[in-house]
Image (cartoon, rainbow, N blue to C red; front, side, top):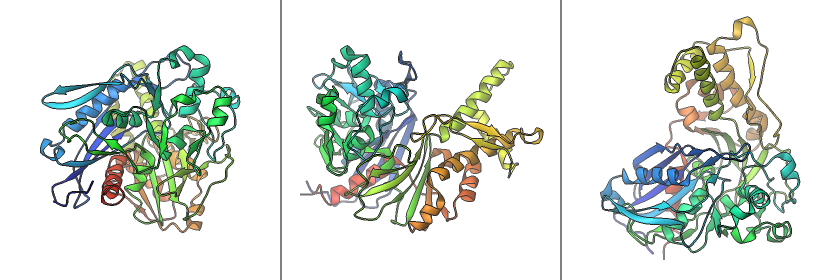
Length: 473
């Protein structure tokens, strides 16, 4: 297809994050965002598995429907491409013959999940170190961790084989959305998302099928790999006013899309602090990672676009640590007979920390461990009677988040790689002046804020670029 040349066409960008869904409309001519909406999913659900972290796909898709339907209907009618990204590593299962139900509400078509599994998210901890060590060594440069799609499927095959046998397809939650939009008989997965599952060779763009089959893995559930940025198909029906037969990207990693929206030059590094935290820079053209994973290395090499890679320090501990701290304070106050809302706690913590510009309190915030060090825990040290105020503790917590990230990817490596500035983004930074101060103290480079930086924007930009090049015919 050829992209219409009129100025009134749009690309719809959608991101299905860990805690929220965002939808944006990008003007194809100006490459600017004209409309956006973001809503919390509240999708977390209980699970019988120990240390499990699961979400309800119905809640996620319901939130997606709410986000998209709130956008201007006249612009949705003029959408010429859909880009989809989302939380990586996780896995949801479905049956290709009855995976969703299409219906009409307020004169617009939409779908809802039908007979899917719960989404096992990237935060899932059911795969213990002992269980992971019992699995075969991947033919991949990326190590396997709990929360990775293949690890979760291995766990289900061992502990709940009868449950697993109910399904014939699997993918990330955003793979599922693309499959439903395009009425795909199977499931396609981008090399970005496939790499995030484990047992995927990014050099050959193939699953480790022989290794997996020999270990009894249900290889029939593996999605079909596609180049990141490729067109996965076309909408099978009108969707929220978006015309039928609109091209849809293969689902992409939210991390790569956030980088795409912000890395203007290859000399940029990108810092993102939202639920988790990442610091990344582009590897030189032609770089190929080693074929053997280094489980102890805090730096991983994520596939990007057009065969390139990003060097990434991906910490499990970011804004979620601050959220845990706030939750702890709220619980303490409840025990003392005082009810407060979490929303009211945040601004008071930031105000207290701003009044405390420095602290000698040391806080290591690795409450969730790290993929390269699963046994690490949080630590508080150098405690004295004079540094136990909320200001001291909040300042130390914000500093600790950034120090932990810099211990994984030392700033000196950025300088050696020719990085000239850091583009910083994420909800954790957007509302936390203290954390921004600690970022600027930790990094010996200019830090740039204020760009329209997020995954939904990035996937919309990518879709727009591909419509103008590879997808045109």
